[in-house]
Image: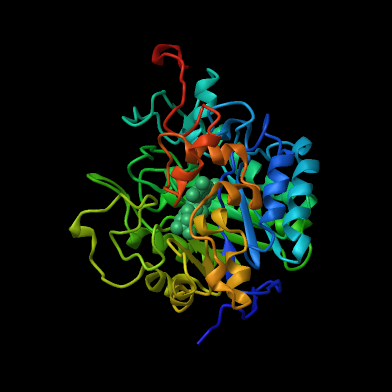
Length: 413
Ligand SMILES: Cc1cc2nc3c(=O)[nH]c(=O)nc-3n(C[C@H](O)[C@H](O)[C@H](O)COP(=O)(O)O)c2cc1C
């Protein structure tokens, strides 16, 4: 039986000290795209959250974000220009201060770049669909723009290397641009980038190639490359893809490119087909529950040498141990926002000291950013955090994903 304290070596030679990973989680602490002192303090406080800490998603193209941002100074971080590198180097150093690996998650948020809409700038996606859940219009990316974004993923990887990160994670999950290209619901193109399940794979494949080419050229030995995917996209009648297509995609990617890991984004680490939407509240129709085994198991045959990370709902040592029986590494998200020593306490036999919910005292200890505080103390937090009601007094307004202030719809370009 694999133990949580066992080191793991990836195929390109990097070794992580234990099986815990902190997954990517937005801190809403950027200003004009730059990481701030708040960002750096937060990551230093989380330097022991796993043998590998993956940063929040950073946007690789100027038109690729910010998403889930409602105010200047509460922004998603950017990596689309060299000017962001010096601050990002401080983030990498903060994460690495206890000897753990720092991974940058790189993304283009596509239709989700809401702060562009709030600032009256155009928002782009694979197809110009009138999404009922977006209070702004989206524009179709031209072929030239698509190719530029692919190059931007490579340039962002170079910046991650320059900033001292140990690896990058390509964000192919959670409805951002890469997933939007894979999804039959959001990709209605009839060019090289769409129209059949095979052509909807061209964008993710080109992004991985761009990243891998950059790594070959510039990265030190052992640089880690991972790919995050949502195993399925099922929203009521709107079917983006099922696990059948996502496993085929991963099979093709991992056969063509030697990825170090694949990271399944799921609400529960043992989710089965039909269960795997990001939010706990979303469930697919029974007809999608066609194979009652964990998705973690269904992806094993398509890893082709990559390691597997799973995530979702791990809050205790027992759950972490159960997750490790299904995959190589266990990511722990919200439990680490609350208590960044979650992993450390388990690894040193002090699991009874884990803090289970957020409190006013814990907000200081974990260096929670004001952006995260506003998210969770406001009226409409996205992914629920245990104890959020304890920190309502810290709310500074513009509080959350539900309180965004858009210009009137006809003003949106
Ligand atoms: C505040 C917050 C921000 C998140 N931001 C990201 C992100 O930037 N990129 C990403 O891939 N997932 C993001 N996620 C999803 C987490 O990585 C993780 O998959 C999810 O929280 C489920 O794990 P948990 O139950 O351990 O929290 C975010 C989750 C939370 C709670």
